[in-house]
Length: 474
Image 1 (cartoon, rainbow, N blue to C red):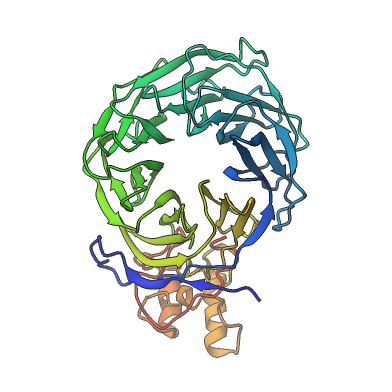
Image 2: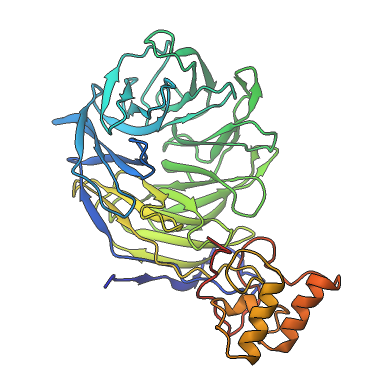
């Protein structure tokens, strides 16, 4: 039987209490399953590298006295992984990896960057989970590069390579061409000068104009805060816009994520003092951060909808203890519930992906000292539903009213989600709910109370439960 770690029902002290008393799913995860990978795991990436539809594990190894390489373990979509295959790479301290079809041959490739130098490894995929390093020239590229990502910034159909240049105080964008050639693979380099030493970054449409923009967090000694640079078209970016002050320690993780149902916010965490910062944006310009104390030695943060309520949650990892802290989002930049779990030493980051393909995000992490990658399966009982959708077929119509009447008066099946059957949201299920649903369907009555149309949680705290929404909220 899986061991479950249940979230403590604590309100995040740094934020205001929630005004709506909605039902919150208790976020739960199974005990970790570990896969032996590299000796001293520097980074982890989950991706389908052999195009079989299932996520595979990529782990980086390399530092003084260790052979540099990229290990790949193929997955079957059920949480099982083959023995890892070693792919040698030439850079000395591989620290970050991202994947995509860079040369546009239909096979996933990888880019690996070095933490301390300007070394840059292009790993051409062979389609079977193995990779071969090939030369690629990017004039003007600088280092070190503690983080790299692939994205089509200029919307020309070709993947670009984006990284932070820590020692040169720049954001770098190498413009991809899709050409499989050492000299022609990239068409120049764009750089954004920064007023500090960037350590982490993310890519998102920060100002709502449809273009991908850049944001970053800084190393200690840079004055703290975060910065943005907005894409202007024609392969140009705006000058750095920076919010200086607060969160002055090293920002190993910076995340652009929508926390309140609008444009993204920037979330960053400082390593030493242990503050998570939430920076709202005004036309893409960062505003003063909202600090949340999360404990010392926090290094990594990832975001995603763990309970499928339509609101992003945050997972934070301590690089000394390896422990996790989970903040459950309830909207309006507010969070409930803190979960703590000890783990091994963890320099490498974390990812939220669906390991076992059940529709829920799981936690995947690299464990530096244990030379393993571990995943924690999401066991959260999802409370999301659509009011009035009773029979679980994904539609709201006369069949749902018939289903409800049969349940009430003819010993019919019990709805899998009782909240969905409470069509008037009065906390009970009776004939008035059938009347309400029929009136909405056929008499032009006002819409049912939320959630309708899309899945969500019950805004009313009542005794009704939602164990199974069928196909409504997969």
